[in-house]
Image (cartoon, rainbow, N blue to C red; front, side, top):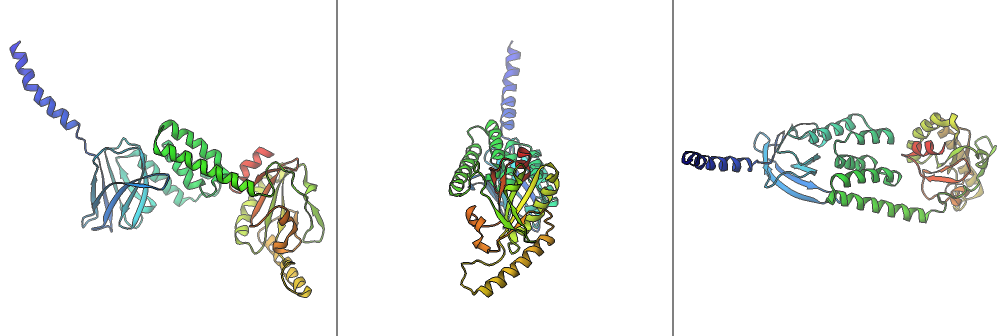
Length: 369
């Protein structure tokens, strides 16, 4: 028994040393960045409210190498690495010990880097590189890219990046990602801030809808105006079909840039009961101080440009109308149009079912057809 006790006595210090060593696992972010000699490096944890908390800092040596040793383990979160004036965002899942990055200062913000020590970081970097090389052309493509996110936090962040330019149109997508994030990171600042972001979006939607003269669920007011050929066309004649009422003009750059998408959607759904009714704001405003001769000349010039734009942009549908009154357009006044392009999606029964459904037009059409 004494012999066993003496052996235990000898082993206990060794075990305690091993235990201590195992508990002192170092956590660090290392890097080797070309063209970054002697630059300062800052690692921060970022949040959805745009706040950033410093995690650590270091300086690159003459070869662009650096190491930031952390006082505590990595947390799951969104991070920002600054090397000199260059920045890149990335996501970690909190399981990392030592993360290493290699790349060039000139392309690191495009995440054109090699990553080791974090599959989650690698996943995010791969998605961003793919987005840069293959630009998203539709909301459907954007949503497909978002689904490639390897964690709920990554999917939530990608949602803000890819659908954040028009969040009101994609509020359902934001809510779905919020639910996943809350399940994975309950009570976290990320989950709380993302919910707060959604609340702000919904408040903005409410304010916008309250200011609209025309609201969802309302019967679309009639429009009866001549087309380029002088023939009067009416909006009510299209009842029974789903109609995109599109206010635009030949002089409107954003309208012209949007036209290819409208043409694409029209060609895809025209045989399924979809029509476009375009109202042009070309011409001359009768409220302007000019002679009758000048007014008629300006209207005639506006008509030529209107017809030319229809041909140039391939707007092949028949329902083009205009009173050639520029911002004095009577239908624009009735519909409360103060900026273009402005669109209204009208259901088969003649009621408004969506306002400005641009990025989510196809999704709204599929529900209505």
